Amino acid sequence: MVDERSDAGLRGRDLIGLGGLLAGAVVVGMVVGYLVDDALGSAPVGVLVGIGLGILGACVGFVVKVRAALRG
Image (cartoon, rainbow, N blue to C red):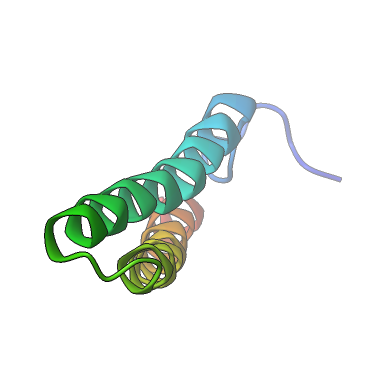
């Protein structure tokens, strides 16, 4: 069982922040991809690449934040 008084670990606000990080990275990647597609006329390649890069960035950010939270 998790000790409620412990400073280590993830709290509710941390989990909300992680969810925002995941959603935000994917949305930003999609929007940038859409703008690239609009400028180059290469639809839907830019959107798909942008979503892929957003997912990759979200995964990296998620791992970094969770590791930091569990260490300290």
